[in-house]
Structure formats: C-alpha cells, structure tokens
Length: 148
Image (cartoon, rainbow, N blue to C red):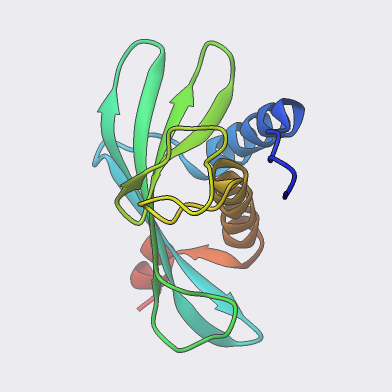
C-alpha cells in the first residue's frame, strides 16, 4: 500500500511568504489595475506576463497572473493563475490554476479533478518560479513602447 502524502506546512508557509515578497516587487498597484511585462531570454522574446487586480479589500488582494507565450519553448507554457495576497500576514498563495480551484493541502489519488496529491505545493512553487523568471528576464512593455 502506498504511503499517504503528508502536506509540508512549513514549506507551504515559506513559499507563500517568498511569493508575497516577489509579487510585491512586480506589482505596484497601478491605477489601471493591471501591468504587463515582456519576457526575454538570450535575445529572444518569449512572451509576456500580465498581472491584473480582480479584487481589493482592506486586508487582501486577488490578482490574476497570465503568462502568454509567443513562441514554442520547452520550459514555458501559457498559464493562468489567481493569487490571493494577505497583506496583514504578508503571504500570497495560488487559489486557482488554469481556472481550476485548488483548495486542499492534499488530494487522494486518483481523484475526479486529477489533482496531484501535492497540487497546492506544486502550483505555489510554479508561482514562485514564474515570478523569479519575470524579475530576472522581464522588461516593462511601457518603456519599450515609449522608445519608438
């Protein structure tokens, strides 16, 4: 009988805290309610990352993160995430990935939605990797447009 997956709560909290800090570096809450970055690596445009504010309350904020890929690249695929930031505790976590809600810390496998047992860890790790990539390889599309 396979061992049952046990959620690593310390890792989830650590990832959520790191994702909050990374997201704050990218998201400055512009008046338009959205911001876009181009992604470039080794002189090639790979696509764009768009952050859009869906909801803002006193203590939380819900953002949509959309990764669009202009060229086929083995490490980049289009993605759509909803991310909830909790400003009072400085944590951000993925609440939906590819329009599918991820609510549980672990899932039995197989399940109807075909979530992995550690789905929550995987999507939050993906968020962190995407934000780090955007900070490292991203550029402002507004600056590019104004250079013309």
